[in-house]
Length: 147
Image (cartoon, rainbow, N blue to C red; front, side):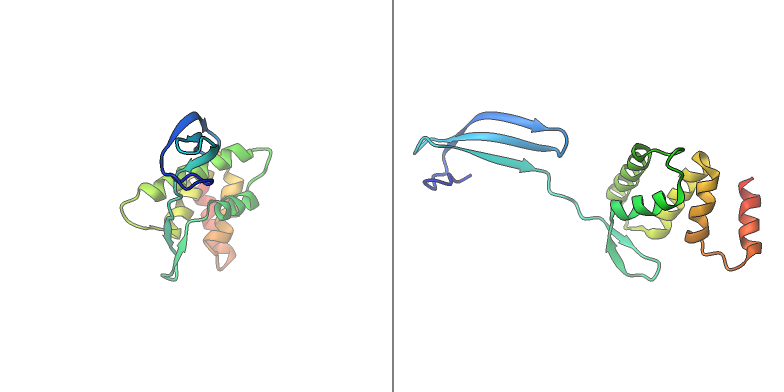
């Protein structure tokens, strides 16, 4: 770490504070050469998770995009923002720890499995877009499988 005032690489940490919200560490340092104090931050580098789309192309995993899709299907009285955030975190962890790139089909099936146990109506709303039913018979068959 270089002192922003004199450029020296020798300093001592005077105070250290961890921030649980964004997983960062704030350090107050004092330069051993000029004696001035300055602040540094240490953050975990964000891991880019690649998702394979249905057409074979690659895209970075976007938790916000997943949340938006789920929110369109759910009733906010049955599922809270916190429930959706927790689920998206689980999907994100699975995508990060998976030895192979995760596909959008895998993610969609995880959402369907989760919604099926929590809110069958939200499941049908999500499935109607995700599964792209071609006719009423397919939709009816899905409802019968759900019940």
